[in-house]
Image 1 (cartoon, rainbow, N blue to C red):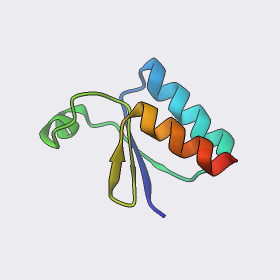
Image 2 (cartoon, rainbow, N blue to C red):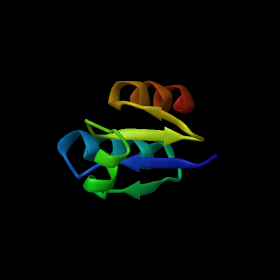
Image 3 (cartoon, rainbow, N blue to C red):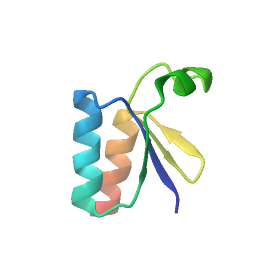
Length: 68
């Protein structure tokens, strides 16, 4: 499973990072804002899991399911 966190160290990015760490999910961090804009991202954080991109709320639900 490949997990990438797209973020800019904002408060929500930090919360999502902590949740990923607490759950033991291995992930890469992508923080090139210009490239994120080119990719069509308008908000952060975004989480990509095996090609599926999720917003913050979706990512938190995905993490919670993995924890249960």
